[in-house]
Amino acid sequence: MRPLLNKEINVQEFRNFYWLKEELQTFCRENGMSASGSKIEISDRIAIFLQTGKIQKPLRKVKCSSKETTATDLSLDTVITENHRCSQEVRAFFKAAINPKFHFSTYIQNYIKNNIGKTYNDVVNAWNEEEERKKDPSYKKQIGSQFEYNQFTRDYFADSENKEKNREDAIKAWNRIKMLPGSNKYLSKNDQRSINLTSEVKE
Image (cartoon, rainbow, N blue to C red; front, side):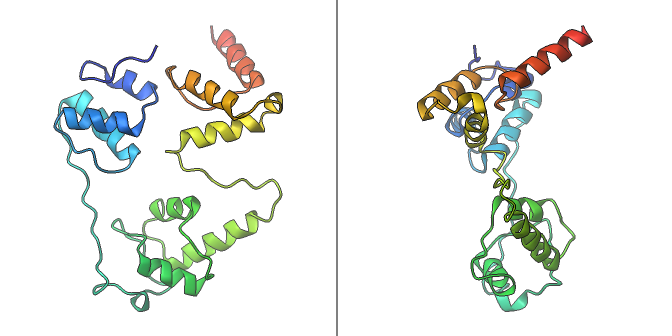
């Protein structure tokens, strides 16, 4: 069974279980911590608190006002910095440079986040490469790591053994796995058998 989320839980147990963002935010408020930020940021904040007892302040994001940065100030040579912000001005630039239908997809947001030091020209190339991949019939849109439920249900219905199942069945399966320690990734029966065999060989 999943343990209670309180100050007594150790950091390893905390990391092993799935928590709703609302649960994490409640814990933060009860313990004098900031409840702002993404689910990943809040989880990291709580882990540090459980491990060290220290309250970490949320990272301050530098915002560029429209007076400081406009779409006309940007170019393909603009370098991605640690304080990069996917603002309306940046979106307007990429719409003009790439396609009026441009949007900050999960793929592009992750690309920008993980490629500090590269330029907007690299972002344009990454967008075009992703658009080419979309033409492949087997292409699947990338799901952000924080959307574990979405990924679980996608994998659940991709399993041929669940072709007769419905959304309620998927939700029941999700509710079972999120109460268990470890990964919340969907595993087919074949995957589970492979893991069991691997474990037996190690023993």
